[in-house]
Length: 483
Picture 1 (tube, one colour):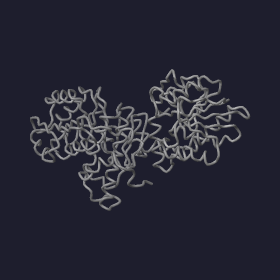
Picture 2 (picture 1 turned 180 degrees about the vertical axis):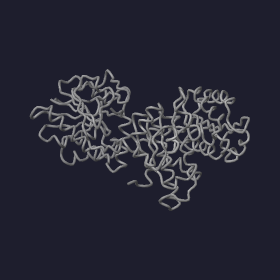
Picture 3 (picture 1 turned 90 degrees about the vertical axis):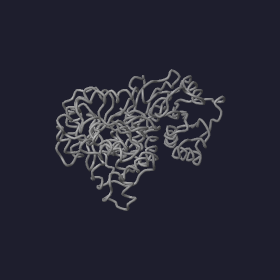
Picture 4 (picture 1 turned 60 degrees about the vertical axis):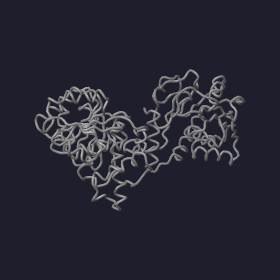
């Protein structure tokens, strides 16, 4: 089962892998025509009522496979308002080939021709909310007819995210849905055909631009609260800066007073909040948790924190008391398996840290993806395991990120990843944020490598990637092809 938004992401990933949407539309239209042919009596009169999006485009394709029937295609709107190039091309093909294809320019004059079968291709999985004209008038006419109704992907008026169906939505007899069923279809009294349209399994396995679309911030908001520093100062500074580059409004770093000035010296863009001592101790935990929860912060716990016994005890106490979202990285990871917490955690171990936490001990994370999934299920938190290929799992769904260059093995890129993850966690569920974050980090590395003229990125600094994070998040795709 897949929601409409995730289906759109899979489509985009497939296109990035070399299976373009136009090819998928051809397959979808062919699958739709097969079902129409099964339900239509010999010599039937078929009317296709199509919207201006790709849902309509699927039906335009189907019309070309139904030559044995009397087919009329009605476009709800003008040809110039068709929203995608591929749908417009398929509409133009109908006209060029002499099919009966008509524009409905005025909803007040909508009249449904007599039909044995009506194809409802008005609204697809990306549309929700009340029906608007001319769809509302067309839906009333379709439901008032005696024709067999075949809906494309979902009935118009059906919300493919929630499974809700408007009372004014289409009451279909058959639904031809693509790739996988959609939430709520099983509750309708309708025959559902799930059509395989050739989307490769890799589009759901490997992270791609569609996953970025799901997690990408649309506005600047939120606060990152980095609890780190002590023996190391660069790590918390990099994580906080990356969170800002990923769209957060403010980045705070809570650090020992002995290193607070050094962390602040990295950039005036950070707000450094010193606390007494040379490292984090349990005495400071209540104040940190209170700050994080009062301001609905996304916490980054661990960068540069150190491994003093008191520090690890403090990290454990923080997670036991905190109830918000947090990215747990570096030295704080070791306490996660033994902590009972209400917090929403994304854990970002490298391969050695993963093994120390009780996960698989391997140099090839991708080959151990199933073991990492089992580990994440046992842990009860999202795991983003960092390696040549990153593996992301919540214990049920597992993804592999291949974006990046070898030069990103330099120290500090993991701290950037923690910050990017926090920035996305402000806007997206934990698994979606953790899936997109290494893709953004990898794309940033690819951009810097290309700028330096080195395919493998040797010689880059982690700090070089900071300026490329915004373009990796909101810029054009792609930079480097992956075998």
